Amino acid sequence: MNATRTDSLDAAPLLEIDDASVMRGNRLVLDRFNLRIGLGEHTAILGANGAGKSTLVRLITRELYPLARDDGRASMRVFEREQWQVSELRSLLGIVSPSLQADCTGDATLEVAEAVLSSFFASRRLGLDHRVTAPMRMRADEALEHAGATHLLGRTMASLSTGEARRVLIARALVHRPRALLLDEPFAGLDIASRRRFMESLRRLARHGTTLLLVTHHIEEILPEITQVALLREGRVLRHGDKASVLTDDALSETFGMPVRVHRHGDYYSAAIE
Image (cartoon, rainbow, N blue to C red):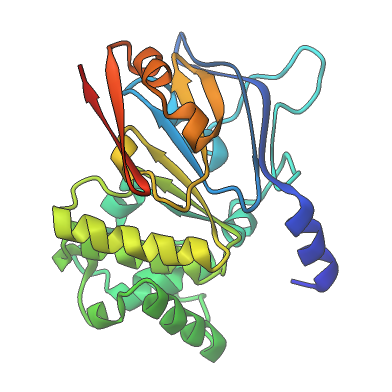
């Protein structure tokens, strides 16, 4: 990436969604959805099941597209562009999701090194036409080290625990040195110790300049480095702003449709139904 493009991306918003609507079958799952996230703004997307989080993830990853607007304007841009080739977008926005993990761990013979290296070619496995270069191997080793997954080399993805596989997926995303990571329910299935270790890995990435976009329905998973929170309900953004002003009893109660009491524990938050 040349200096001009780097400077341009540094100044560009990570995500701009303007009056986007998405249909799934006959159901409107995102309804005139609006959200803007700047590069460097670590943000949590929080909402109940069915609020539209999964659809939003698939919209960002270009698996779904919004309905055309009546005025002809683009309703969604990532790094200021409406259209992307998936392989090019992955070099800027890394993805860690349950569907990707299931895809990788469901392959009985896929080894950790191949799972990471194949990311350079936007594929799950290395093909006969994929030429892995020495710089690629160096980048893969570097990414595995950053993700705390070097000790997993030589094992198959199917043999890993949930937390171990999640670390490999982080490394797979990091080989491109992306500007941002989209993390879709990244702590699901982790035990208490694995969850904390994985949290610390993500915190280090955030402190070293990788923008985190965390999608979750657990307030306890919002890392201290995350400063912005968007609350989703029924396919719309209910509230969006700085963490302290959004994570309130009233806002969370409206988000989840039940009386919620928010508690703060140092740099972390928790919530309970009253």
